[in-house]
Length: 174
Image (tube, rainbow, N blue to C red):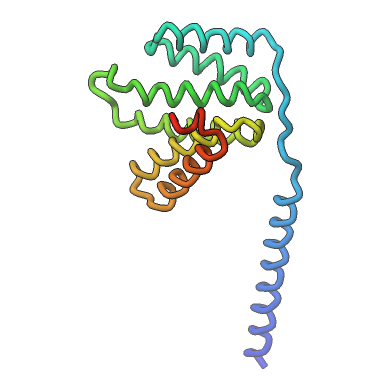
């Protein structure tokens, strides 16, 4: 009799856990997707201008200030694909020109993780921008190599290949 009661409780707990997991799955899958919305605020315009001015002038040392402005603008409107894209590029730029640093700190690779996050966000908000998968795939390739994660490396490789097929004029270069 005790064995049957114990089994009953175990079965009930298993069913309840399954139902909760199912509810979570349904809740997550039914959540609305973020919708793109361009920002017209002074902060967004200043952050965008700061990015381009510093990038064109190759002012690598100003990246922290540019990231601060872009992050503030992004937090003001996390639905702006342009802000997400520029923020991703500041993190990629920080890694790309790391040779300017002496010594190069090991945590420089953390910028790739942030670049991946913001490129993925930009891709979600601007799915028709065929440049983004090239950048995102390249970052995934780098992260997979650094972390010795073959799955991520392959994901990045095939993302870059698909990006090149979709927009060869741009992504063959990327």
